[in-house]
Length: 158
Length: 212
Ligand SMILES: Cc1cc2nc3c(=O)[nH]c(=O)nc-3n(C[C@H](O)[C@H](O)[C@H](O)COP(=O)(O)O)c2cc1C
View 1 (cartoon, rainbow over the protein chains, first blue to last red):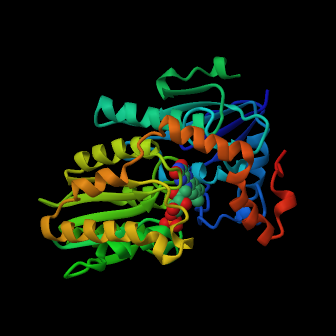
View 2 (spheres, chains in turn green, brown):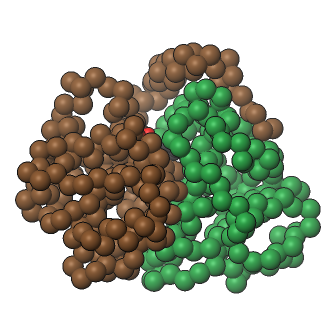
């Protein structure tokens, strides 16, 4: 099983995984230039994520340790989400009853998000969880789970 | 109200948010100042906006929410000074504004948590091509944005009627779905994309999977 970890906190050593450590790495921000759709299809104009992209699109599972920031995903993680756009085609499809982009790759991994941090209200927690589920649904991920870090169980992940 | 407009597009002066912001202030008696999140240091900008009664962020929808650079600004945004207000204008590519409901919910709670008076979030779909269209095709949109801005200047609030019009369609109707599915099946929906790809000599690579 190929697993990719994206982490904003903690020191989880999980064997045989590729780690993108966002406590050390600042992802270059999306420029909105559409190079990834019109000029070099599937490739971002920035090259800082090329190694990560290779691991990501070939993974079975992605685990994200997200630090709740102002009740949302951090700016750095949001930029990483923005920079997933190259993995989809510009074409749109309506078969689900709403607009979605067409996948570029045949399959996408599962995702487990474990978040750390407080919300001002239960509604705030729901907004955060719904946003992440929605995002990965539109990204054609199959298994999607979003849970507080207290629910993380290393044995289950390996 | 002394209002600052923040353009949240990574494309700054070259994007659709710029057009929306400029049209919003165009017919005001005293047009608001506009700053670009893409060009500023988020911490300094967060300090600067404390001098205003109201902040309006005009931005594109990026992956169902604000662009990463806008979240970096929000991370630095301080709790409101007494009576400060905040509002948002979001324009997006997809036609149905149901895609904006997640971020709308978040922005409302954010305003509440930081004690800002919430002016609301105006959402407009089908806006990705605004900068490419000849002026006459944008005429109606611009008039509506002018009106939105003027009413805002007079009342300190977003005009309900325009907000509602921009919000349509919230979901695609059966009829719209059939029409769009037709465009999809016949390949007509792809013609525009192929023009861009061909212009960049990238047509043959359009289905590439470079990271497999
Ligand atoms: C990285 C990225 C992500 C986007 N995500 C969405 C989206 O989730 N939904 C949508 O309707 N449009 C999306 N768009 C389209 C933009 O919202 C649209 O093109 C907008 O007009 C761009 O505004 P700007 O020129 O001011 O940057 C996305 C564009 C980019 C570059």
